[in-house]
Amino acid sequence: GENVEQHPSTLSVQEGDSAVIKCTYSDSASNYFPWYKQELGKGPQLIIDIRSNVGEKKDQRIAVTLNKTAKHFSLHITETQPEDSAVYFCAAVRLNEKLTFGTGTRLTIIP
Amino acid sequence: GAVVSQHPSWVICKSGTSVKIECRSLDFQATTMFWYRQFPKQSLMLMATSNEGSKATYEQGVEKDKFLINHASLTLSTLTVTSAHPEDSSFYICSALGGGEKLFFGSGTQLSVL
Image (cartoon, rainbow over all chains, first blue to last red; front, side, top):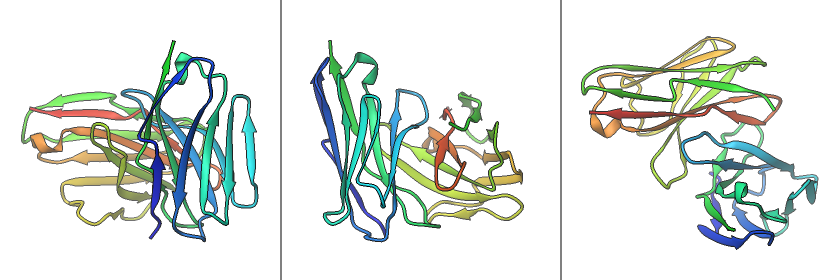
């Protein structure tokens, strides 16, 4: 089955700086890679996703890049703000299979 | 994005009682819903896949007689924790497939069993 590794487990960034979270996956057939943000006591919220036929996707301050050859994808948050503080999960899935989550990254934005 | 409503957001119960958690897709029909369990500072652990009109598929190690799942309509799935014990205390989260492979989550239910 799919195995997703996520790094770092914790990340502290000065407000206004950029944050990068990286994930690797094992199943070359995985073709959909979502990122979720989870605030304390709440369910995960889908913030951005990318399909295997695309190398990069951007939505305002958030971007995701995918390297299919190396089987890794990354989340980039620019101009970080205090409300970006949360736990972020990457995930990978192939068609008709179940989503496999990474272990999570606790991002703290320092004012 | 699609909205998934989950209730209650928190519940405290006595050991031995049963607790029902509801998960509704508000603006779309979900033939497939998922139930997860999450321990503090850990990732989500899939418990079962709930399919409308059929029996749920449980992950290895999850007791189907303890965690009863019902998906009677295209917008509602329920998880009942039967004869709850303190070790069942956890954060339970449902999700639903909305629009291809996009997965949307409910707000979660914190269960505390005394």
